[in-house]
Length: 107
Image 1: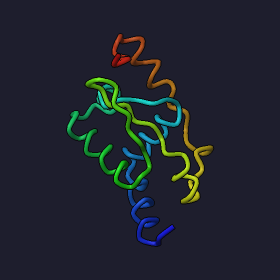
Image 2: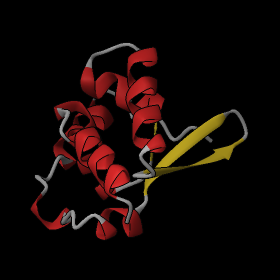
Image 3: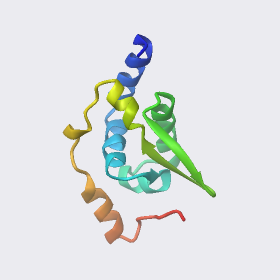
Image 4: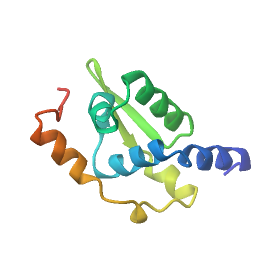
């Protein structure tokens, strides 16, 4: 991997919000509308973080109608030597959304 691309990927992962997004996506694919209530920040802010992750090739997106689902680019994370095994389990975040009726399927 090119040195500058590696440095950019590592810088991208250095942000706590983006690192938590990676941990959440490690559990399941998500759309921005699901991440907004988890982080309690605006949709444009989450979208900006997703854009940075996408530009670093750490996530991929798939459009389903009007919705965009994000997933991890596991191959890229492996290429930079990033282990997903050490990320915390944030499944309780999704459980809380479900309890509040805020878990969105976007279908």
